[in-house]
Image (cartoon, rainbow, N blue to C red; front, side, top):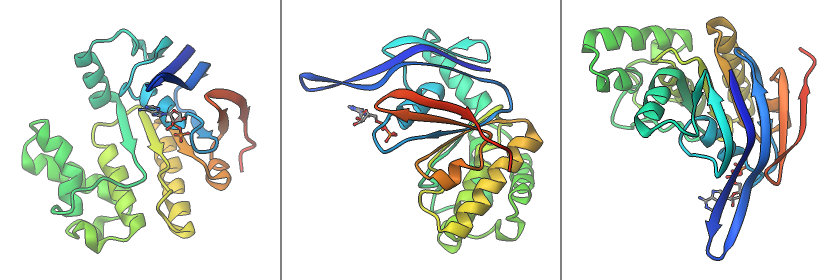
Length: 228
Ligand code: ADP
């Protein structure tokens, strides 16, 4: 369960204060699939960073699964991100010197999991995203869609209860984008993961069950969509 109450985030830009988010309140229930939409600069990334515990609000309260992200100390936030959160970005952020399997294994190795166990788990996740036959390919040998599916597999290594995808299709052609969105939707449904998808594409947002629209840092629309 995610709850934001009267959340604002202001940035100082010289003398000026930029109101990136202004008095945002919302609740997202477990297992919801929500698209956050709106034009560039409306506050989508700011909102995601706050929900991911990567940033703190100027005012208001954010609670995720009982943890107040507003008051939690840095160690608690790190722990929250590691245990509960999977992040997917527009630019995949894979390491080019590693193959797909190694990229997915890396977070597990960093956590001290034995290499064989990490590789086995990474292999399972690559199977889940349909990339078993690409496991030993390096990043430059993968298409954009395959790179994003590898990044999704990596985001799942800690069995997150919350998956946040920030413009995950921003760098993909239409066919790859559709496949990535279908995959995210399938994962969320099968693994009972809450999915928050940030996008400026109306087509991509239409896959979600609920759409939250931001404009100038405020929610101007929050509605349930008919299931396709
Ligand atoms: P979106 O993701 O919808 O494009 P952002 O959340 O990135 O929007 O930005 C919202 C507003 O806050 C914009 O006006 C942006 O310029 C401003 N902003 C974002 N990050 C910073 C920052 N670190 N410092 C100053 N202004 C920022």
